[in-house]
Each structure stands twice: as C-alpha cells, then as structure tokens.
Image (cartoon, rainbow, N blue to C red; front, side, top):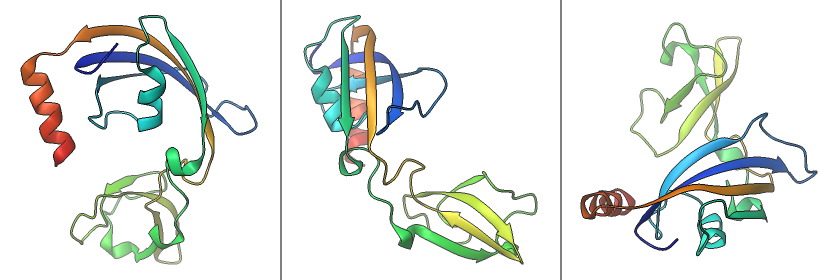
Length: 153
C-alpha cells in the first residue's frame, strides 16, 4: 500500500503486560499518506503492506494516547450539566464553555459536584497494537481533497 489508498485494518490492543484491553478486535479505515487517520507510528509500520499483511508494535504513551495530564481533570457543579448526566457520559468540551478540542468523560458525581476527565481513557499507558490489513482500495481525488481539508483544520 502507499499514499492515496484507503486501508481497512483489524486491530487488537494490549497493555504493557500483554493483557487485552478489549475483548474483540476492532476495525478502522483510514486514508494512507499522513492525513492523521491513525497514529503516525502505526501508519509507518503499515507502509508497503498488502491485504492480510500484519504488524505488531509497542508504543509508549507519547506515541500513542499521550501522557496523563492532571490539569485535564475538572470539577464542575452538577447544575452546569444536563439533568440526566451520569458517570460514563461524554461531552465535547466543558459544558457552558467554548470547545477546547477535548472530549470530557464524567468519572464521578458526588456532593453536588461532577468530575470530568479530558484525558484519553488510555492516556499514560504503553500499548501494543496487533494489526492486520483487511482491505485496500484507491482513493478518489475528491476523497483525498476532503481528507486533506480535514487534516489541516
């Protein structure tokens, strides 16, 4: 495979002890060529692979989902959240504030306060990806232009 091709992958995630982080494999499609559809080190490991090609690589947090940042954990009065808010719900940005590019997960609600965490759920964790290419197809010029616009935004 090379730049300008849609690649579909099946992947599994494991922690640094080799324990699976999810029960089953997931699938993702992305435009190969540096458009930001997958992590850069994963894309580099897949360069030149064909259908059924595989790769397995371990990524430190900096190359995967980032280091855990305590400053992304925020306490808010529950009055700022919708009435039916419960742990596990997510918000794009903090409710009542301008979007900041983070997705916040409600981790706890107690004593009139909600704790929202803007870290990726796997932040601070080294992970191993086991990848298999399941399909490859050429992208159209329109698809490439669209991905380029989205990656520059």
